[in-house]
Length: 358
Image (cartoon, rainbow, N blue to C red; front, top):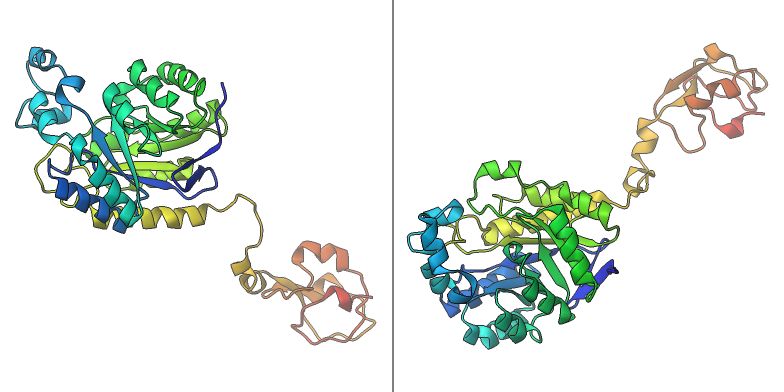
């Protein structure tokens, strides 16, 4: 098994040292309207997204009407839907005939166009169009689909919500056997938008992934409110972040309520960029912006009385007070200068410089 510690999505390098790559998942939030889809692409770019992602499925190729009818009732986030699962999927699917216009719009505004394909026909259709493929969490067991994506040679973003570590290991081994460009996305697949979901998002899985596969690109596909979980994910090593995107959280539809809007998306990007700057490189040092404070906040040894050249320094002649100019003796070295001869005359309160000692 081999995997790359860096790869490109379009013109963007994805690596541990690169800025976080933001995917705005427009998904069903176009509400079946091409003009809305194009508008959302533009808004996503303006809000700071690197990628506008859609989901391509056909109702009869992703869900079984009989299967869901047999369940008796709709559960989880689907319980709020006013139509059947099949009807919702049919109503909100991204029309494949929109593709040329969506890609053109993305290119015009300078944002990557991506999709999550939910059937083999869609994988085939988009393999020469998208710069990378996203595998939805629910399709982590749909081997025929994710392997077809992997064999395209495009980078694979694999969401791992509602799966076990054993399942993830198995799929990682399968994908990397044919494609080294893989990003693992930690994810929780509860889309209710409940604050309780913070108890289940389990961000430390990101560190588990990195421990299991050192150097592998990891990311976070998030459905919790706001962006606090995103900040945590980035601090733990996520380099790709995906969240749903809408223009209006009050609109009716399956994905609007828990999505970020242009204002909250921009706030997320700004927060992450600040965090990235704050994380630094891990090397402990006196920073450039501390060159003055290191002087005014540290203590140096100073004289408690006027002294003449040739006098011997005694403990009672010294006290530790701020500031500590460059070259001054630190209290850390008080014992080293006690009993030394002062080479120059100095006034009470003056700092002792190493060059003052004979």
